[in-house]
Structure formats: C-alpha cells, structure tokens
Image (cartoon, rainbow, N blue to C red; front, side, top):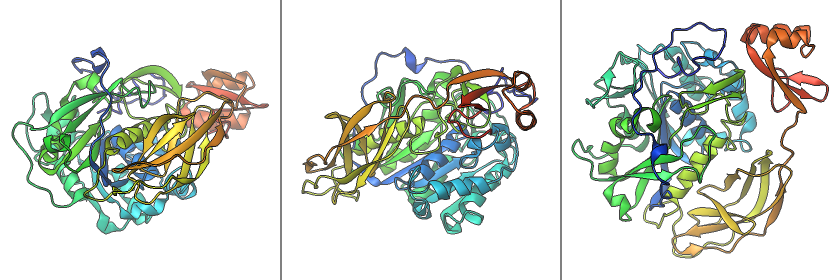
Length: 506
C-alpha cells in the first residue's frame, strides 16, 4: 500500500509499479479550529502498549526498543526491522527483501542505556507480529527478520513472549473480522488499507499483550472520541496539527485504565482517510469493555525533500511515520523528533494516575529527584535523566522555571531549542498526593546548528565531475543509489560526505 507510492515523483533509479493515489480527501484535521490540550487520565503507567501498521509498525518497534522501560507490549502489523532505514536504502527494507539484522542488533546493544533504554527491558515485553501471504509491499521475508531479530538471532526476548501470525492471505492491509464503510477486500492493497480478513487483528494483538480480556463491544461505542492539539508536542516534522484518542466512559470518570498507542500507516492519517483508522480497525471495541484508552497520533503529508539516513533526499508525500530519517538521523532513538513527541503524549495521558493499580501512586508526596544529568544533546534538543524517586508516578521537567515536559520514566528529551544556547533545568516527582520540590538545577548547552560548512545537492555523476567525490566514493554511491540520482553532500572540513552529521559516506 503505502510504501510503493510513498516516494512517487522522487528519482530513485528503482522502477516499481505505483499504487494509485485514489484517496478521497475528507475533512482534514487542519481545517478545525485550535483543538484543546490532550487531557490526563488515571492510567496505570505499567500497562502501556503500542502497535502499528506498515510505517506505523516500524515506528511501533522503534518506540518499543527506544522506550523499552515504558511499553509492556509491541504489535507489528506488516512492518520491518529496527534501524533498517538508518543503514540502507529503504527499498532494501521492504518489497520482499531479506534485510540483514546484524547491524540492527549491534546498534541496539551499543546504544543500550544511552540513546535507547536498556535492551534488557525487552525481555519483559510481549511481542505480536502479523503479515499476510499476499503482502508484496513489505512481505513475509521482512517480518521473518523481525522475528529473528527479537528471538532467533538477537535473543532479546524468549520465544514464548512472541506471537507471529503469518498464515492469513491478507495483502498489505490492516486485518479485521467485520465490514466497515469504505473498506476493501482482504486481498486488495487499496485505500483505506483496512479489510475484513475474517481475522481480528486489533483484538488478537491486545489480548496477546494484555492477556485475557472481556468480550468486545460490537455495538455503538459508549466512550468518546477526543481531538487534541498535537503542536504542543511537536510542530511540523511530518506531524499533523491535531491527534485523536478514544476514551471509554469509565476512563473519563476516573476509573483506573490502560493505554494503547495505535499508529496508522502511510496514506492512513486523518488528512487522507478521515476517521477510518480511528474507527474501523477494531481497537475501540476492545477498549470499551476493558478500560483501555487508545491514543491515535497523526502524521501528515510533507512534500519537502529531506536528507535521510541512507536513502538520499526524499519527500514524505503520503504522511508516513519516520522510519528512514526524514526528520533526523536519530529517528529511532529516544531523541527522535516524532518518537519523543509521541512519548510526551503518553506522558500527558498517564500523568493523571491516582493509584489503585500499580505505577507509583502513593499517599505521600515523593522526594525531589536526584542525580539530574545531561544524557545527550543536538543543536535543538537536550536529553536528560535522573534517579527515580520512590512512589513517583511521573516527573515534571522545568526549563528556566517553566514546566516544559512530563515523563513517566526517568528520562526526557526537551526539543525545539536554539543552537549554541545554555538552558537551566530542574525536575520534580509527582503522584496522587502531589508534586515534590524540584531537584538541584543544572545547566545544559546545545551545540552549534550544524557540523558542516556547506551542502550541495546534485547527481552522483556531477558531484564526481565537480571534484566533490573521489573515484572510490563515486563508485560507492553510484552503485548504491544510482549514478544519475540526486543526493546531498555536506562539506565537513575538507571532506565531502552524504552524512549531515559528518559521518562517513553511507
């Protein structure tokens, strides 16, 4: 579905059939007046899970790895391996390829405890993987590698914690077991990419991650659909101005609930198919009867070309979640722009925890956090961590005395900062009894805006002719991307590279 025409109109030197962009635009979420802020609810912070389809599945796995201390379960519907798009051209990660997972595993282990949460947390997760035999957009060989990364080769989680469904004849689509207006047949990869495949994908994934659940509500939803402002978490960078959540009636009145994050695929955001992913996938039916809030973050089309990690310069015209580095080479780390924005949403929803089901409620205000330190920084972000406070349900981050973020873990990334600027930070601990005093403040400084002095976009052939590439570099990039493909090179000192962070040629 979504990957085949994601890059329509971008010269990649790869001839593939394109799926028609026959998506009837309903009312875009941007047409609404400013939406209210995302509310906080009484949510058990130990019961958060995530799933997604296609690019949403890539993002779900990225979140599950980068924030493994937060997510107890991860659902991957027709998605690929962690960090694949950070290593090789995107076409080698889908289309029935068999991407190597050696470098993925190496990076997970080397980033563990720094750029991502400790990988030992993954052993406690329940992993659900789905692919259809008719899926030629991603393909079973790709999801086989996802399973291998988790279990066979990576050994991050025991086989008993993974369920891999791959016998359905489904095409590249989200599988349900009921009919909804606008959906297509199970063997057709067409908008809205949600199909009656006689298989309850949402229910199967949720029950695998949470265990036995009450029977779903097949009637009229009894909860409410909440539209909220996404720009307070991240403006631009491929994200729509508003997101959605489904809130069961009991959760709205203070009952202790769980949280599931459901990520649409390319061409499935509200801008493209209206509320179909929000209402037709089946998550809300199970949420209604099991006190599960479903968070539906929204990506949006971006027709501006961006330098990616390993696929040259590309636009994102179909509103895919970032799995190739459109918005930074740290896209699948804790500092990734979209990933950290989604985690801020998770932090907001769960910040209303008041006790009664794990997660650090308590009747005594916790002590102020200690050991606040800088974990990393970019020109526009600063990542911090601290020691846990006993009894804390969440933490508030203050910059210059103003609260700027909430986290349910002992780390957070503050984004939208200015290069070469010093900021003062403090953090407090929160539970149902109240908020602690703030920690001892620290200062943190962002580095300069870019490590390179200039950049030039041209074909590989022209870069070589202009002397920006050596013969070896010319052959390397030409073989990988195509000699007539336009790529961006960056001048780092006296060396040209296609890495915006001044790494070696990729």
